Image (cartoon, rainbow, N blue to C red):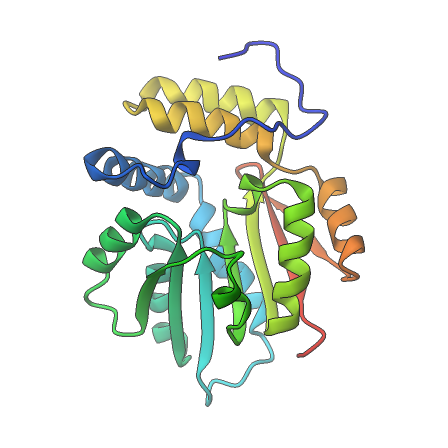
Length: 239
């Protein structure tokens, strides 16, 4: 851990979870604890509220296909499914993750949600690029990628997405780094501690999101949320 940290630029340091071969009890414990941390900090609600906003003018009479990229063990989509049921939407929900162990665990935890399915897939693959989507969700996921890959992915994905993309990701800020360092005292998982600190340094400032939006020729809707999150909504020109 570094006690004197710079957040001027995004770090290129990779996270342990970027190794898709990680599996077993370690990955399942990490995913469970991350879910608890995100719920405690209100992170899942940011994504659901972003989805609620982007679907404001959508019909509830037709099926809406929503894909959650980097879905992990599916906690976001289970929340989305509950939101859809409560509000009368017809959702077809698909979770995508490059880690097969995460997908296996997501399936195990989602047996009560018939509207959910999960797939092991690379979001940069031709298979993904050929999908027809309504909404894409990206929660604490896009910070894993460098800007050129992000620009390319978002540009291509918006063209294949009918409604738009809802991004919930980290605000790169010194206070966020030190607060997570303090929080790590109560976390008994070294992967979460190390990756959590790296994630903050791989996060975004508002100017980063504005610059990416400009490169893909989209007017962004960016709002700051607790705890040190940005809700970044990109609406498709197809809608």
